Length: 362
Ligand code: PEP
Ligand code: MN
Image 1 (tube, rainbow, N blue to C red):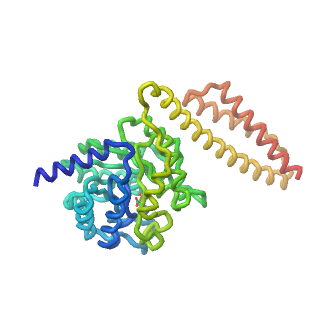
Image 2: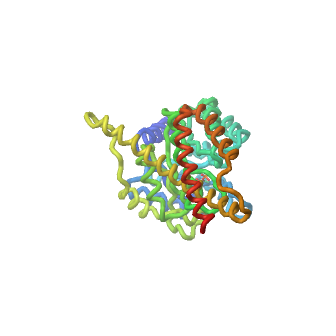
Image 3: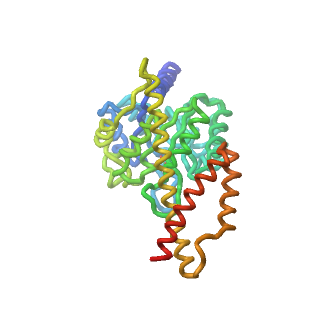
């Protein structure tokens, strides 16, 4: 018995030591047949390392499918027996941790809706004490790195050695391209703060739709993430949860084939490879800055419209000084010189005025 357990521990640790780590499986375990067929088709691709499934589903509103519950855990055990794939499930309570460990789940993850709540994270951490199961921690639904860090600290304090992060994006109000805004800079900052932790990207929950999964997965690989967690289902359109974002195991394999995998830094190319990675990160941040600037201009235009309707001047010196003062204080905290902040904001201001001018005179 102990030998079997040790073997399982070795297998999951081996999977977590390779790169990229590919985790896939349905959003939710629905039926035994669905679970076993998904696992077998995933295993057949030869591209998946770890089988995921949601057993308890914390849904935004009651009434939708809330997970099959503990009775789904033996299906995962069976799937592992058939395919050799180690398994992972989401846990949100102490009881769920006990049940998952009882049924030999190889790795656990804490969901975004749990990471936000230190009471729940602590309960999970307390239940983890004494086990050495690897734990992945999703970012909280709100863009707060302290909460994410707090969850890592609570799990680490419970004695868990192998901890990883899952970047699944952040809630944003209103309709956007993404279900959860990626805010790549936050994940990058979290990785910079915790270089020893694995960083997995979850394109499924960032995108919320199939058509842009590839794009996000590629970005993550470009940014040197350690792996991907992508939901898959034997019949995605009829999935009981997250139908729009799931893909078949075969489609997953196609996607993984199409991704351009960035090479590890090797011998003489090490320097160039490292440089290239940093440049990719800079490109992504620049893209985000441009997008944010575009949004800022849209807001300025709205204000322009309002000023026009009320016959108010475009230039409001007191408001501008207030903006600059705020920027100086912030800039100083993050190491930006007053000179740079002034130039940067002057340029933004001029562009804003040009946009408002157009509105005023249209
Ligand atoms: C999930 O992985 O199915 C899930 C519920 O994700 P999240 O916690 O990111 O919403
Ligand atoms: Mn899901």
